[in-house]
Length: 166
Picture 1 (cartoon, one colour):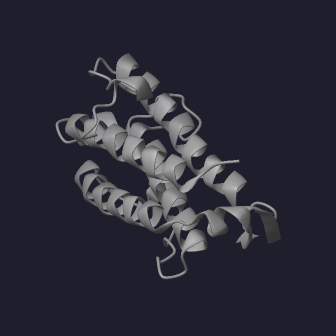
Picture 2 (cartoon, rainbow, N blue to C red):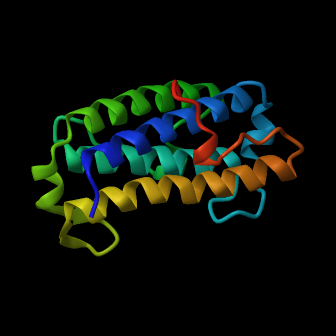
């Protein structure tokens, strides 16, 4: 289905996207970040926190050495600055994980405890990795829409425009 090269490219894309988001989030007022914007998770910060929390939970499933996140997903980081710092750390971890990924890993199955299903689940590891990166893109699209409606400069999201240095 996919190769380690796919995961490495998507990890690079993820880091590039988040680097652009961080530059916007750093200059926004906290009340603008926490304002309910009618999105599924309400605010920009809640949506960003959900995405970060999910990235951390998937990384902990992919590699048990990575710690599971604590608390509620939408309340992971109380401020934009805290989110920026945690996001950068997570993106480094994603990139490192992708660099060490092997085809044998992708060809195997992954079993984890699903909080949504309230039981263990097993899926092809490759499909789970595709889900991981697709989930990021989905929620960054929501963030993009919220930033635009808030009058902020939304980052370029097209993968084809990512530079070689990401």
